[in-house]
Image (cartoon, rainbow, N blue to C red; front, side, top):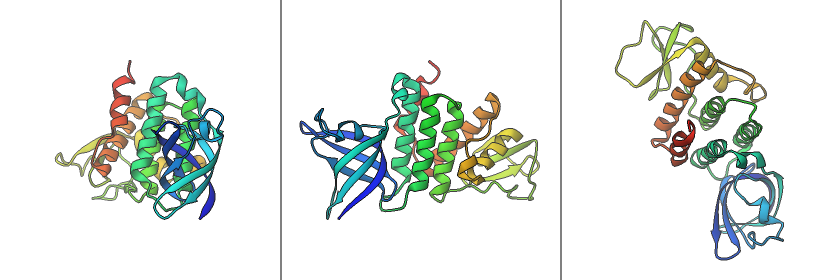
Length: 248
């Protein structure tokens, strides 16, 4: 069976002298692994279209036990990311997140749209890195069915407080009156709390349309990262690398 789709190359591996085995976040089939034969040849149309972080139009043959990319044409290569090692490392973290979260054989248009938008803003350097990181983490988890419950305090129903405590393992919030130390938690000021609610509840058209102070960004980033690690039950290697160089 052959089909046409669009996809982002989130991982690539050289096979033999001229072939590539790529992992692709596709619009129609989720995350798949596919062979691109002769993709390393400089004159082949698949050469640039199957490189890491390239968003491409793809013609794919689906066999019994493997996918083969017969043709590929680049739509966006996010070239500016390759000029900054820190932003490039964050982009690779986004790709690894997609690999871990998005299943195969599903309509993944919403996942793809979030990743592409985040890469666009990251490439153009028009949104703070920590904000893009938080948006990408929490929105992907939300789409995948791991949306936290941020409507109100899980115990008393209070909607707002000067400080709300985000409970990492349960994905709920507690107000300062109901919170007691014990379960892993992150204190969030009002701005960070509103931002997290915006990320998981807003329409995708408005997802990136907010700003918060650098201090609120740090609170939000810490909470989103902790929830991502708890949900995946592991810390991704690309996150470790990003953390090791981001303050250089």
